[in-house]
Length: 343
Image (tube, rainbow, N blue to C red; front, side):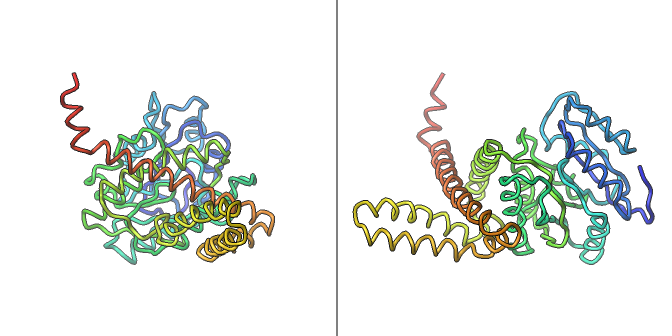
């Protein structure tokens, strides 16, 4: 591994499954870190494109798993093998900045009582296609607009005290796909009395190329539905990140907007003015995000991105409602009684 002094007491853990070109950019950025971490551990999660070989040729520690067990499993294995006081988890499609290690080290030195910290995507996503720009700018804004005291964790670029991580049992390995295993860990840290902090100055570049299919599948099946179950199990909604109050209000306003558009057919002018009111309310509540869209890519992109954002509120809220119904039905005494008597 390329050397640069001083070496910090941070172990970087990167899970990878067929990382492709993005992973090679991730590795290249790792070699440019200053200072260098204590070690960089790449856990090859059953990949078939020789991603592990690229990591080995870069001089990093490689742990090969024969089958893909999911990033939660891979990160836990890497964490157990690590020797640093702190673990820094980085996704295989993320490009760190040269000063990332220095930033993480400085924060833990300044605030030694912190158990974990998390960063943010930057506002210059690596892939140029529209959905990648839209989705990653949305993620960037979500972190930048949130409070610093969080009850979540983020494995895209997140650091944690290794002893605390192991004591908490690491990531929940029942999540077999890239899911909400990091959020769930953050919830457990909070419940155990540990403090986590969102550090907005620690920014990394996301290289992922989103398609409509991958975006909807991830947002609905790997985010909204499992996150709904987690929220209901904890019986508490935190006013942070995606769950901020203005986002929840916006999700409700979307249905008002849809109904007001339909009302134009029956009530004409009343439906029209209601549509204007709901649309302006949505724009007002999300104005800082829409300013970001405009500042990065102009008016045409912004209009298209706003439409997608409203669609996001629609399908996410529908997924939440579906998850709520399923959770309550699954947990109902009536269903439990049926399960017990069914042969």
